[in-house]
Length: 479
Ligand SMILES: *[C@@H]1O[C@H](CO)[C@@H](O)[C@H](O)[C@H]1NC(C)=O
Ligand SMILES: *[C@@H]1O[C@H](CO)[C@@H](O)[C@H](O)[C@H]1NC(C)=O
Ligand SMILES: *[C@@H]1O[C@H](CO)[C@@H](O)[C@H](O)[C@H]1NC(C)=O
Ligand SMILES: *[C@@H]1O[C@H](CO)[C@@H](O)[C@H](O)[C@H]1NC(C)=O
Ligand SMILES: *[C@@H]1O[C@H](CO)[C@@H](O)[C@H](O)[C@H]1NC(C)=O
Image (cartoon, rainbow, N blue to C red; front, side):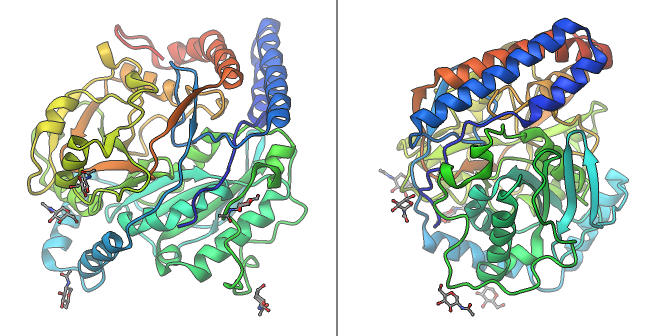
């Protein structure tokens, strides 16, 4: 729908400021040298970028690509209206009317099994490292008790907000999203939220809670109180503010700011009201009915679910061609994999990052009724650099806020902690995530590679020793 944007990303250094201060206080001088170098190289990269300003695009959903130094170009999307209509029909019947007894029993069992605690949802303004965060700034109408759903938690800037409606049409549950909105990006961000709430699907108001954050060095000129924002209805004959946004329009490009991906990830996850969270990237759309099926499985509480180890539930990830519709179920996905219109996510870019244990067997297995654990994997051996996207809980380690999206490896530190803590990875059988249509074209990007190399140094010299001190070491675990 609102696609073919030319977002072009490669920006720059808010987060490094935080790193600098941190390092200066807590470590020796060598450390701050590393960080200064990192800062400088980020600026150089930014300058280079501006000169070359092309239509290249980078994709936050791709994030975390450590091993191969390439850049992604997103190809525009078309989505099948018919498929969405079908989805809508099915889900309306399931979610709208009175919850039947069976569903209530399931949910009560989920509460028993998880022993979860409800969390209130209130707006608050709070500092977080070098950032100001407007938590629960614009809230969904619907509230949840901790056992009642799964929250999809994610992060973006306004130029990615075209994904929200297609995502919700499939997810149909609570979404907690943190938006990076420094300086004059703030006003456009608020307009975008206004447009989404007033001019698109009613699902937005029902389900989506927006948090907004910016660096203390890039505070917007005007920040309305949470109860004064979006008081006027948006003029829906205007085009969506997030449509076809070019790099030059964005404040963060002018100021060469890096995208502080992990601040956004953590803010969104911490605010989720439900016990279970799916921390994901906004361009990854889930297969339908994940929530109901997953909670049913939890309520049955058997098999590998009974093991004592801490656990998370990874989903398989796929990409589909630009004009393809997104598969509605595993049966359709299998057909698309067979005829080449779908491929595993980032198959070429970084197989080690997204390859899931027993993926051949998963692919061969027929879709069946309900949802089950397909295989219990570990993040070691061949999967030592695996960056799974999973349904987890608030107990799982968060993400390191010193890492930026541009520097890559932004989920590796969480992966290390999960490994040392001996997490079981309970891979699910009939559900999956599909990236917004458009299989990436691969291109070398020496600029981003340089920043990634510096980030690796930061991880190796500073962050990894910290993780070893905090979580310990375990054979077979690596960042
Ligand atoms: C939804 O419910 C209505 C009325 O109960 C029914 O006519 C319709 O066929 C149902 N649709 C689906 C997709 O099940
Ligand atoms: C809404 O925007 C359209 C297109 O710019 C404009 O013609 C119209 O006057 C606006 N309506 C209001 C109420 O501002
Ligand atoms: C997007 O914006 C560019 C200019 O920034 C323009 O040339 C192009 O036609 C626009 N695309 C669409 C689909 O509106
Ligand atoms: C899978 O989705 C397709 C397309 O919507 C549909 O025709 C088919 O019946 C579905 N299969 C199953 C097993 O649900
Ligand atoms: C591939 O399979 C999908 C799902 O069955 C189908 O919709 C699509 O038309 C097929 N494409 C080709 C090129 O065969």
